[in-house]
Image 1 (cartoon, helix red, strand yellow):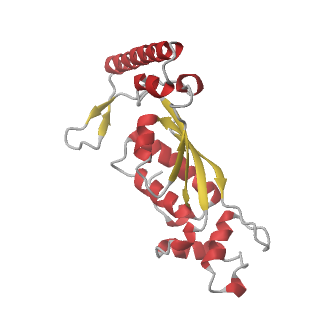
Image 2 (cartoon, rainbow, N blue to C red):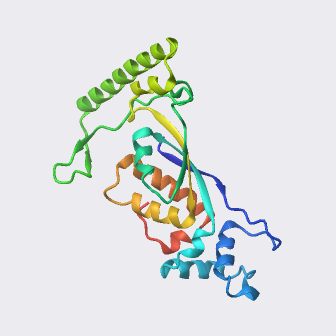
Image 3 (cartoon, rainbow, N blue to C red):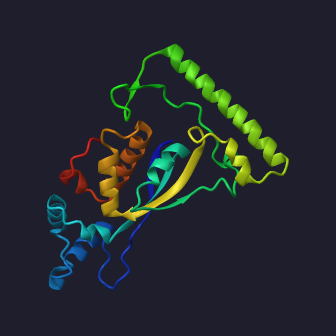
Length: 223
């Protein structure tokens, strides 16, 4: 839950020797120096320079698509990032209770009275247990109502009104340039982000640095 996984990224198909997506960014950055475009030995140094000096346009030449698994309330927050394109599991056409299901283990956190963007983790067994009991009760009732509606021929687009956003699992594909992913991770791994969304961003950052390893050397993020 609250995970991201790279499922696709730009693969160069031109006639020059096979290069990685990381090398392709450097190739594009050297558009004005064609005699040196195939020099991959200094790509790492070049890419670090571009990041340090905020020369972002070459990072728009490579796109990355990630599969996101989270709850629908967190997915709603992610949809606000307008530089990305999204394809989300549709409750209008498919049965989410069958394909994805519910969760009943949302973390018990208290409201921070001094900062409405923050919540406070609490070590209170009784409160935590009761919070989870209520989650279980809500999902049972929601599932019963949803199944009743489906069994009585009510359209999925109407039956989905019973499904709680914060307890219903969703899966979506999120596509954007490397530049967009860098800025998304930098923003959403920071303070002021809901914890569940932060976990998605950290997972996305972990995936991104598998393919673009130099990022960890030039971008200071709290992962």
